[in-house]
Image (cartoon, rainbow, N blue to C red; front, top):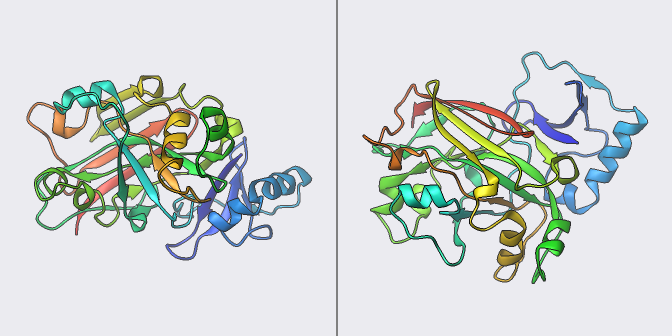
Length: 283
């Protein structure tokens, strides 16, 4: 099942995208797709409503697609989680997941404008697989238990400002939490539909030029291992999102470091999870 939210910012309504591309209004089942929805068996209720054929169809023309999940409680990120990306940045392969947090208010829709911060000269792109938590989780015993708490997956764009991230502080948060720095969507695909999260290709282009072409099988720490690991150090709540890292091909690691400028267009996609497109503007 694919869940999404459509409408103007702050006025989104929940919807389901069918296999044949139709949009069904989920408003009679839930007021929004958020942590409360996931915690109250919302996915099961939505699936039952779709199967019963009682959801009205939405006319998609002119509808803005927002982030498929209302503001997450936490956005937890794992850095340097692909061997080729660690190598291109000159970093050693980490012995444990590199964990940092990103301000949840950075989450915007998959086609919304992304703003380059004032004073920025090193705004960068990162296509990532996002994991959406569906059940409260603490001290998970291993990958099998971790799989049971995952509601689904999303395309997540972990936009980064490298000067802010690497030169202004010993922590990474300054370069990760600028406004609009986490486009998400277009939809949340439930875990049962995705299957094995380590069998997904990721791609990203800038102004039509391919920059990233990776595969989740190349993660240093697989998805289920990451979820179990994080649960030892923080309580994971329904509606939390985990960004699981990016493959090689970011501007930081390319010859000439071709960082983003106003007017640039970035397109990204992950197998089975849909695609995004953002044009960058100036804050």
